Image (cartoon, rainbow, N blue to C red; front, side, top):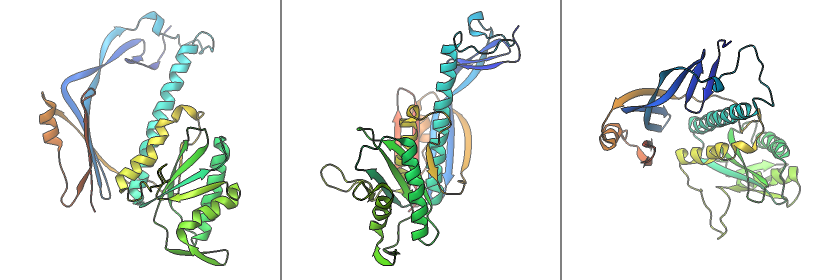
Length: 297
């Protein structure tokens, strides 16, 4: 017996025993435009639809009166988990990216360990306490969005997007330069000389600062990319990033355009709002994916 089952499979879906194949709509493209604050992002990708292919083959079906078996359905269960991890990671990446844009963060901090600290849960515990102490040192307000990343050696470090710190701040009765505040507080948690808080991003191996003058869109993309880059390393249900309270307000419009030639489509979708500059403009020929992002000063 086949019950009221909806199952996602690589090439489509099975609904009530009927196989619906996901197919490309020739000459049709999906155009998604998102705007938030000074950022406009437009993506163009091939449009797809689901076509009724008739009854699904028996080997694809799971009877409604049988529970999933870890032994019999191991491959299918693993497939479901992989799909869920990818889906959750992509959603988290977009949420992180647009939260940074919504808040208008203009500073990037990087928290590192000197020791090879590979415990992800401990890193997040340290980060949570660092945020609490930073907030207290800054008068009760510290908005941020953090992406967690393991280094090649395995040690975790954190990329923190936030508002630029004041020039000076008083900490434990002593006036210090604010750029030193993050390291002082970080070491009070992880131990003296056991880590640093780089302002503007970690120095390169040649000793040069990088990401110091990163714009809003590039900063948001930089911090959020690690969510999907390392999604498989995080157990199910684990937070993939951390941020202060708030929810981004993003306006999204979706349209569909017909075009036989991708160049005509790009011409139709190219738009730079007055006073804005292009911060991302690229086309992936193999996937026919196009993105345009602009940022107002």
